[in-house]
Length: 224
Image (cartoon, rainbow, N blue to C red; front, top):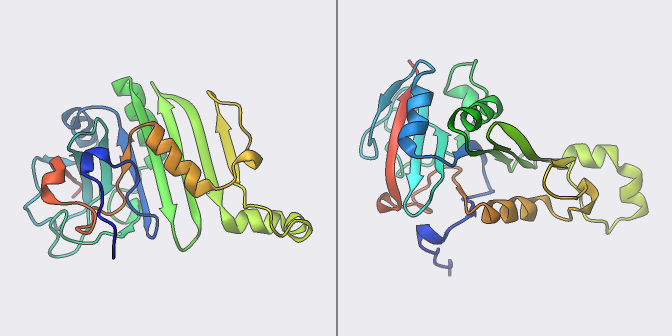
């Protein structure tokens, strides 16, 4: 029996780790975030939760009871309605201009809105996960974990200590004294970090995880 999920107001962490996704979280009202993103050359459409989306672009949304505004790619399938279609293939590069860069946009939004932003990603095929966290445009913390790179560069350590827990590939922080080697599980660390920020990081807006009334609103920034 699948355990019942807590109400949306009480959900933090990653929506799903069994997927390929990247997204942004901005501690600011949805309208402020969408207005800046629309300045990149997109068309801003408000409240699209019941509309079909057929062009490249971004979904900008806010969960009920949450302060953070989320940004994900919009699907380019012929019939796409938010919260009713699985968007597990979530590489931004397929849906937005090549000039778009998630990390730089997160930093820019943090600086322009004088707030916190998080760029996060997860890849269940490549076994990578991570986040980059800014406050007022200043980099505060970064975690990049790639299991394949770690294993390739630590073969001797793995042979000498086969029970040793896999360590993140890169970690830096301005507000806590911690090294990459002290992080026992990168996936749990990402979850804990998002819980600390009271942030729910969407990966696909799956109908298995999100219902229509879980959202304050979903907007669409079209790049055509």
